[in-house]
Amino acid sequence: MNKQETIDYIENKPEIQSKELIHLIKSITLEPKTIPSKIKKGDVYLSVTGAKARPHVVIKVVKDIAYSMPLSTTQDSLNLMPYNSRMFGTGYYSKSIVSSKIDIVKRSFIGVFDNPKELNIAIRTLQSLILSL
Image 1 (cartoon, helix red, strand yellow):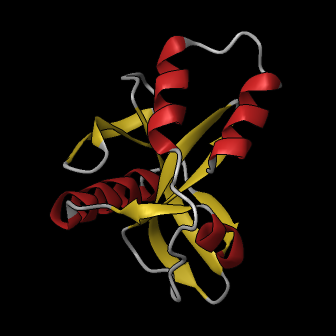
Image 2 (tube, helix red, strand yellow):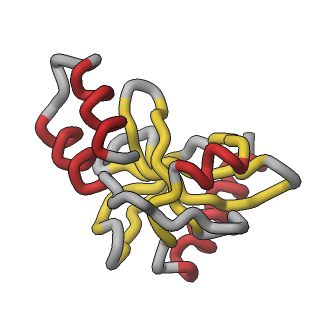
Image 3 (cartoon, one colour):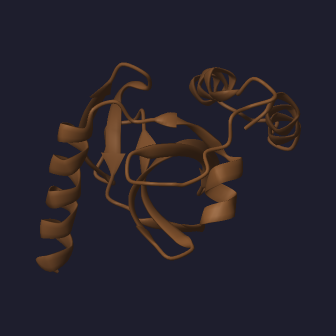
């Protein structure tokens, strides 16, 4: 999310919480930003899930669709397990899976998740949870 997109988002949501505002400010990308030529597992992009803009980490790419898990700073029953990242701090992997078109992921790209071992554990945990339903 760039500076103008962040301002537009905040203007349309007057009751924004300070924690969300801080997260949005930290997520602002510098322009011009580097757009990756290819999206792959571990890439992180910013997208609105529910009522909040939050980072999503790509867990699988199939053709022109990227499947991802949103990242959250809140510990609650909707989240799977904690994560620890040098680039994205600490928080929680969501139990949700989001599908997005690759071109949207490229435009909203904010970085690469720097803890692939932990990401693989989260993916396996999410797969087990889904299979147990």
